[in-house]
Each structure stands twice: as structure tokens, then as C-alpha cells.
Image 1 (cartoon, rainbow, N blue to C red):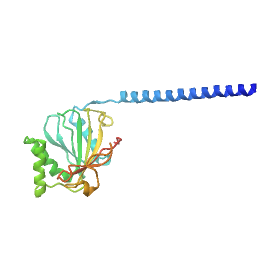
Image 2 (image 1 turned 90 degrees about the vertical axis):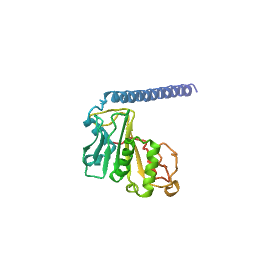
Image 3 (image 1 turned 180 degrees about the vertical axis):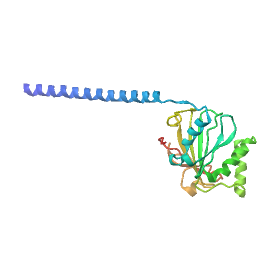
Length: 224
């Protein structure tokens, strides 16, 4: 009996040692992961976007990787002038981030949406408010005066709170993606989508029944 008791005690001690060692190993691994993540962020060379070249390079991240070389690129330059930075030969137009605004917000959209986008810029330049622009384009789209592009045409947004980027990768600090699929005058009934998101990365339809009806998609991860 005495030998059995001694054996049980030894098993208990060994088990306790193994559990303690395992817990310490797991804690050590977690600490190393945190340190590595912090060190990686500290090593990333984020710098202000302070030139037209940097503005274009960062804004092109809004486009699919395989299409960036062929995109037309337009928008406000560092001097505040609306210009064409480069012509393109594919289906995308990139609208660069406005350097005069806080944060970063670049867009890439299908070229068939250009009349709709250009009309918005024109009305905004005239001093029209957001609701006024919406009403004017709604009326013009219903009358056929405004071309709304191909149904299903997409808009890709690359945006974030920072206006700094990594000159080696062109990634903007803490930026993320959102995708929009335009379906003029579509509704929840015609698409089967909810009018409000049911999850952080679930698609839903915004402005249903109007010229600006579109499917909103916000991925949970970041892919460049």
C-alpha cells in the first residue's frame, strides 16, 4: 500500500510539473508573438504622402493588383489641381486620395461609371450639398439624361485614418478595403439582400430603389 501511495504522489508531482511547463511554454510563445508583432510595426517605414508620385502609388492600391499598371489615374494633385496623372488602357479608373482632406480615401471604379462620378464632381464644384447632388442625379438618371454605367459595375475603396504610407510596399497605414457593386434601382426584393448589414463582413443593399442603389461589401481581412 505504501508503495502505491508513493507512486500516486510521484504521478501527481510529474503531472503538475508537465502542466506548469506547458503553461510557461504557452505564455512564452504568446509573449514572443506580441514582441514580434510590435517590432514588425515599429520597423515599418511609414512616411507622409507628400508628393504626386507617392499619392499615385498609394492610391493605386485601391485597384486589383493585376490591373494597376493599366489604370487611368485622375484626381487632385498636391497643388490642388484636378488632373489626369496618367492615361489607362483597361477597364478601371483610379481616383486618388484628396491630399487636402484628413486621412486617406482612394477609389478605383469601372470606367462605365465615369459619367455618374464626373457629374457628382461637377455638382460638388458648383457648391451643391450631398442631398442636392443625390436629388439632381436621381432625376437625371430616371429621365435617361445621366448614364449610370453597366449594371453590376464596381467601385473599390481603399481608405484609412492615416495619410502615411510605406514607400516600399505602397501600403497606407491601417487602411482597409470596401467594395461597392452598383445596381441602379435595385431593391432588397430584387436582390434578396438585407437593407442593413447582419454582420461586419456581410453584403447588404444601400439606397435601395434609387439610382444609387448598390451592394456594400466590407471584407474582414486585408489583401493587397
